[in-house]
Length: 208
Image 1 (cartoon, rainbow, N blue to C red):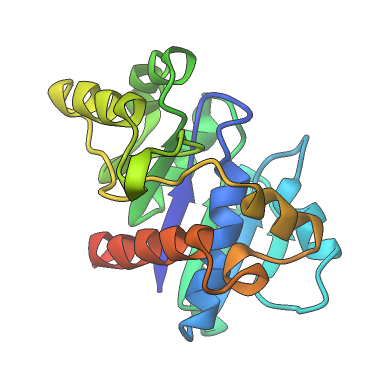
Image 2: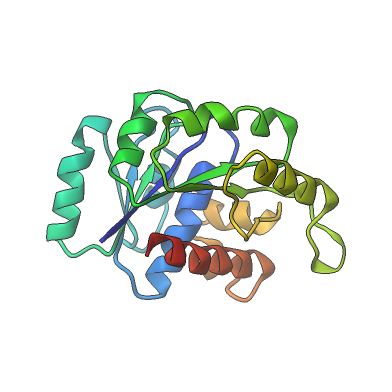
C-alpha cells in the first residue's frame, strides 16, 4: 500500500478538492482507496462523502495521533492507497502525516500569496514531495499560461520540485463536488478529468 499526503499552508488552495479527484481517479483504475480527513474544521472530504451515492472511496475523519494505527489497519484491510488530507495550516500535523507518507503533494495557486508560503510548508514536510500548481489561468490553444509558466520557473529556480501536470481553473471541479462526484465521473472525457488522470499517472510514478 502507498500513502499520499496532501498538504498546504493556505486555505483555498484546493487541497481537499485535489485529494478527492485523485482518489476517485485511482478507484476507477482499480485501486482501493481510503481518504483520511485530518482537518478538524472544514472536513471537506468527509462532507463530500456524505453527499455521495457510492461508498467508494472510503472517507473517514481522523486525528493525527491515529495515523500510524490507521495505516496498519488500511494495509490489513487490503487498501492500495491511503490519502491523508491535512489541515490548511502549518504545524506538527503535517510533519507527522508526511513522516508516514511515501509522497507529499502540495497544491498551490500560481500567485504571490501562495508561493511565498511554500518555504514554510517545505520546512515541515518529509521528502519526497512536489508542488502541483492548481486553479491556474487557462492558456491559449491548450498551452500553459504565462503566469503559470512563470510560477513553475520560479519554483524550479528555488530548487522546489514541481509536478509536470498543472490543474486549470475549471467549473467542472466544483460542479462535480456539489453533486457528490469527481470530475472523472461528472465529465469523464472533459478537460478537467483529463488533467486529473494525467496528474494521477504522474503520481503513480512518483509513488514507486
